Image (cartoon, rainbow, N blue to C red; front, side):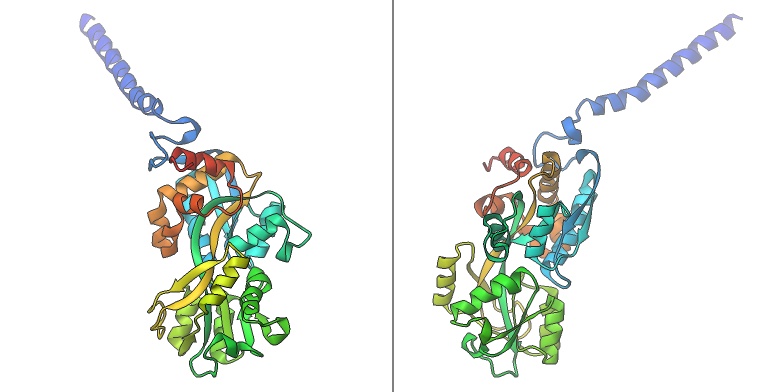
Length: 344
């Protein structure tokens, strides 16, 4: 009997020790978790980023074949993979004008947009004349998207002055409504001096290749797939803008700045091309919760290498660029993160 009692005591002690050991690890780990589900000691920590409850949201990319479409898909992937409780669907838009309208109406939580579109949307000019959109905010930017002015190499178009009477394609929405006109106006062309053909970047590339348009004038990231494919399949010529015209545009529209396309960016493009550019940002609605914007911005910063692996321009989306090139008001959730980084 004594032996049986002794065995029972030993077995009981062993079970109690085992239970204590099992409970110790989770309690220890849990005590180090930061509020809101994000652990670690600083804003650059690679630890878990999360929001308090499960959400599925939409992010506006861009037109098929364009840089925004690829970047939007990349952003959606990085955020979904690295923010707990948040799933992001990337949806196409016809361009920045539509993106601003969809964010303003709440149909999109976030969207990629060129600076001129969300600036004019905020102040109620251009495509938003008399109908400003209240509540657009900046989350994170961005990169410059120089205007690509492309013609076939076998055309008789050698300079911007040769574009009078020509068929010019640009993306529907902001590019063809606002951006193409200020480029052409700088050269003295009114809307009756050329034919504007609204097509997506990939459609426009096909139209130039097939001879259905004479020129592409499109703002987009250098190395966009539609024009890489175009210049590989047909010989093309890139037109440079004139310095005085670029300066005049900037003086009238301060958010449009000088930019160059480096030589060798596309097949057959052997010289540097002088152009101008708008800046590009991920915007959101003012009513998007602070914790969500904070988590999205942090994920895109902390996991920037992952974003850059999807598209090289992902590397350009940085807090530093955002704060330095702010065009409209930042979202409070973004401000919180940038303050933690010491940038504000």
